[in-house]
Length: 73
Image (cartoon, rainbow, N blue to C red; front, side):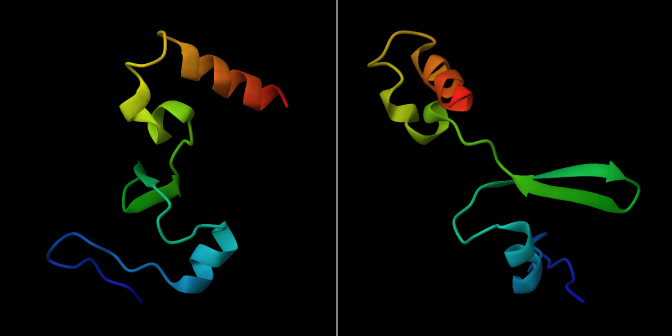
């Protein structure tokens, strides 16, 4: 059974990651859902998050419109 390290890190078993479809490099969010329980889920994938350095190049809301178009497909 994994334990919490002194750096507050936990090693998640490979099988659990595979079943959840998570891969090395994926960003995840950890949320407290109840006393003693955490939910770990994949972080949101958005153009703005992936290409944040480009946000000053495009007009405000451009990446949100791209995200919305992508969701409609």
